[in-house]
Image (cartoon, rainbow, N blue to C red; front, side, top):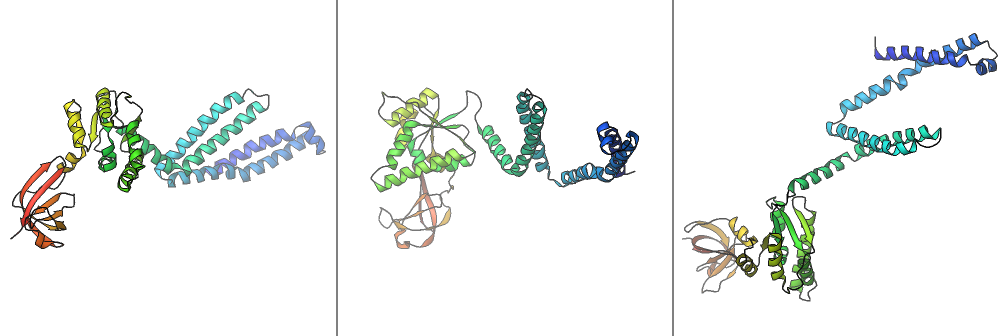
Length: 349
């Protein structure tokens, strides 16, 4: 016994009863010029025929189509459909309650219509825009996971030199920045002044810093906060940064060697991007050889200069003769400074 047969049987009985009761109404059998019994039989048979033929069309077939769609629907889309339906129903029911106070028959017609429309809109929106909604929720969850928790979270105060340098953006996008990047308003003011400088070089550096700041703010891997804290009695931006770092118990990110020394002397933890860059550069030891291109003359006699891919300067003894050529060099000495690493080498024999 199939589901379709059962639905036809149920439709036959239900619509037959409805038709018979309808035909038994005085207004109906009088208008048909029939007796009550004859009218009830005719309308009952009509209802039975209607139920037998059409019940599967609006019961079994829609259910089968729905089941087929559910079976073929990807799990994520099905989940978004259920969420959309639930959200739509909840919002519709919240709106329907005050509408139930309307006069009869609006007190049930309008809430019913609102419920149907709300369920449809919720389902439709979440199905059509499901992927975008998932991506946005994923970004928010990632940002929430990256957000420092509690009052003891690490605070990283960023100065102008770090924004102009730009490597802070690359470091942040690796996910290694474990804390909130705090940018004071007075640092932004200084950055805008650099961007408006009449000197083309300074102007380009300032605009680069503003662009990189926008990129930082759009990143989902780091939290950036602009603060309005200021010290009106302090004139220099560097001094304000040190005072603010002390006030907020924050670390200071800077590429300015002198600012770093001043902050360190006053007990402020300093994170220098140059030191980080040096720490992750390729390590060479005396006696090791590698290939490099000599691109310019050095300050010393017959000295040549080249650069590794990470920007490390290589001073090549007797390298002037190899200008604009790729040669093998042997490391003789290394010097590490806060401003970077310098490798001394000579042409390999």
